[in-house]
Length: 251
Image (cartoon, rainbow, N blue to C red; front, side):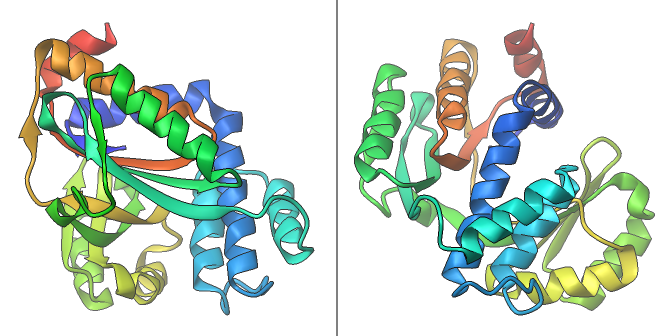
């Protein structure tokens, strides 16, 4: 999930990851399998950029090597479901723009579940392109704060061709680049900083929509329902919720 609130990032990522580890691994496995299939069965990460990113993310989440290999074998063997990628866009409570990315073997089920999540929480699902124009497609590379000093990481990011970097003791180092350059930039960073914690292609909001009170609570519930859906891989939203408000919601 993407949005603006430092407390949100800490609370959400840690709390939900601890509570849904197996679901997280399932999503990572699905991405690895799809990466192999879409790469024509290529299992060499150096020859399959999407697989390289998927495996890197799985390692960053401490996914066991055996699980990673099983997912690769599933994709190369042509077994299992035929997943399709689909993106849904719409508005949540408070007029917040929301993008939902899915990998699914049943388009009707995904559409029904995503629409229900929006509708039940006072949102409205729109057409493809209805909100994505308010976001920029970016490559996002994350390192723990221990990877290096702010200056050292910034220098490494500049040398690798990154566009921006945000460093925070709690959030770590978040490096942004053009999404088409993510492979090259991540490899450049790896040469200087080691393997990243996560490498993703994200939708970065151009502007944020402030929400608070009941609307903030309902929005977070809607996003929670979406992220709990097995077909949903990522949720991005342009909300701005204060740390104080998020503390109330997490109480």
